[in-house]
Each structure stands twice: as C-alpha cells, then as structure tokens.
Length: 355
Image (cartoon, rainbow, N blue to C red; front, side, top):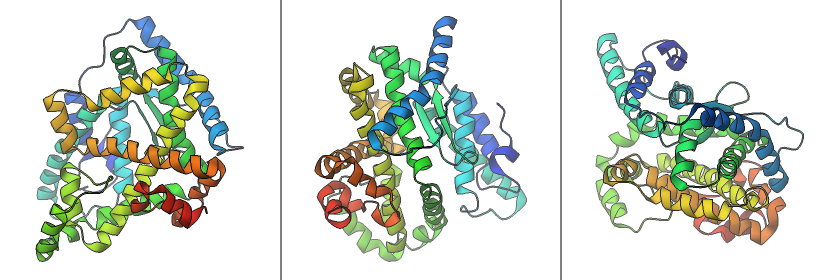
C-alpha cells in the first residue's frame, strides 16, 4: 500500500509531510522474522478468524456492545501498519497543528519533520502487536501486525493459538470501548485537537512561569506522571493546557488499563496458558538492550507501560468493589470518566460516581 501526501496529509502544506514520514519509516523499518510460508499463512489465517470470537468473549465479560455486529480485523505487515498509523495521526491532528508560512521554507521544515516522524514510526513498527484506530473511516479499523505477533510469540516461547487470542482480546476491547460508547471517539479527538493546538502557547509562556516549573520539577511525581520529552512538555504547560493533558492521560490510562484487565480476566476461560503469557510478556516489556531502553524513555514508551499497570489496577479495584455493571457507569459521559488523581485512588472515583 503506497501513501502519498494527498492520502495521508490532505491538501496544502502540512507541518509534517506524512508522505515523507511513510517513505522514511519504510526504509528504516527492520525486516520481520523469517518464517516458513506455511507458518506465515497459518498465522494470518488464525488472526483473521479469531477477532470476532475474541470480541464475543469481551462482550460477555463487560456487558458492552450488545447488538453491535461482530467484525473481523485486518492483518497487516509492518509497511501496512506504518501507512495506517501515519494516516491516523494526520487525520487526528488535521487543523490542530499550525500551518507553516512561506511555501519553500514550509516545504523544507515539513519534510524535516516528516523524516523525524518517520524515524519514530520505523522504531514503533517492529514493536506494535496491534491497535484499534477509531478514526479510520466511519467504523474504525482493527489492525493486527502479523510479523510482530509471530516475533513476540517466538521470543516468549508460548502457544501460538493462546497468544494470538490473548492479543486479540486486548485489541478487541479497545474496539468495543469506542464502538459501544458513541461519544468517546469525538471526545477523544476534541481533547487531542485542543491539546495540540495549545502547544505553542505553552512553550511561549514557560519563561514567565520558571519558578513554578522548577518547583514542580522537584516535586514527587504521581503514578501517572510522564517521562522523557512528554515529562518536559508537562512542565511547560499552562494551567489550562495541563487540564487538557490530565484529561487525555486519564482517558488513555483508563482505556489501556481496562483492556489489560479484560484480556487477563477473560484469559483463563479461553487462553489456558494466560498466566505464563502474562508473566513472560511483562518481563519482555521491561527488557531490551541499552539503546532500546533509551529510545523507549525518549519516546515516552516507558510511561505508556506505566499506564497499563496503573489503569489495570484501577479497573480491577473498581470492578472488585462495585462489580462490572456499576463499573460501566464510567462510560456514561465525559463527567463520569476518572480524574487523573483518581487513577491512583480508585475508591475516590467510586465515591464520586458509583457509590
């Protein structure tokens, strides 16, 4: 699948040339694992066949999505994921990032930003197992990156059927979150647009708030605080921008933690080796060589790993306290979503929303 500046970036000069990003990422992306053709075909067929089944298990546990059609997922390679990710980010930030003035200078800067974005996409393209993109078309798109799933399963030395189902449970939970909660897609897009649109103002106002920033830097971080560039960005935010950022962090932590909780709660029923998979996968998340760990820190991936743990703990405690039906009150409106501070104090959310 070839990406052009029109199909991923739209008309006009974008602050990021996504066509350049895609071509750069494809050049830099590592090749997938070498597997016999028969094994590759079997893996693709299995992934395609179990996504609808996996979502059925998720619906049975959560009580969400009754009456919605059960859809298959799309199995892609690393090139396919790169193009889809670029298109999704472009669509999500379209109009939020300020356009560059001066066509020649804008083109150079846009291309440079495209190369930088491509390098990030190339790194991530070998790590992402799957994702649900709520902004692809009218109904979203669930992607499963076959070479990465095969590579991870081989590295962990776990059962192929069990591991594929386990991954699909997580991604199908994300799909159900957005398809069963009609307002969530627009709310998330609105928060991202507001956050991205205010980045320049946050940087411009940072100097006047230097004493406050230094004080914040010395303070003990909360369990969901960001690392790497996102941590620096968090310090630079104005109070208004921080409020938007807190809402985004709270929402993304909930979505990831809820999916992790569901995949492990459903797991024992349909994934016999779920305990082994979880143990080895958690160790794999923490592993990697020095360069890999540095890149993960710089890109904020370690902070995302922390989100999984914090969000899963929040979800589990709330479900154990009030049950899944009352937990689902969380999807009623933006006002019933957890506040960032409540993620580390689930009982505070229970008292506020589901007493």
